[in-house]
Image (tube, protein in one colour):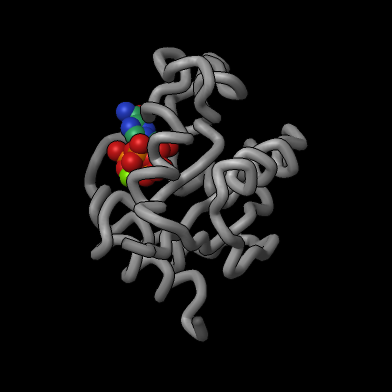
Amino acid sequence: MTQRTLVLLKPDAVRRSQVGEIVRRIEAKGYALVALELRTATPELLAEHYAEHEGKPFYQPLVDFMLSGPLVAIVLEGERSIEGFRSLAGTTDPTGAAPGTIRGDLGRDWGLAVQQNLVHGSDSEESAAREIGIWFPNL
Ligand code: RTP
Ligand code: MG
């Protein structure tokens, strides 16, 4: 089942010059890049993107972090790419993410919240369609 998924390389990935390394891992896994853009988020875009987290204690710090610098927005395509990319990314908290994953290998606990975990990947077909529509409305 070929799927598209929305991936964000968060501002920490750009700041720490890990964009090439993360894109390399995506390509090595065999996914195709359908869209890739260096972007700066806006509060409006993030309110839509993170609507499910509104009201949670980490919401505002997360939004502030996502506004703290440019990010890279990507649409990937490949067989079961939604589950596949989340597996490449590793668990949310980089401290406990398995070695071999993006978060496990490249992330660490910076003494801040787990928001600085390098990447986002859509978590279902429904989320992927919704998030691709937010970031790439012309796709
Ligand atoms: P993502 O959406 O970024 O792919 O990550 P995820 O599914 O693993 O995590 P999710 O639960 O959707 O949370 C979205 C992002 O919010 C930040 N977060 N902070 N307790 C906390 O401080 C906390 N929990 C989540 C992380 O940046 C997470 O990726
Ligand atoms: Mg999520």
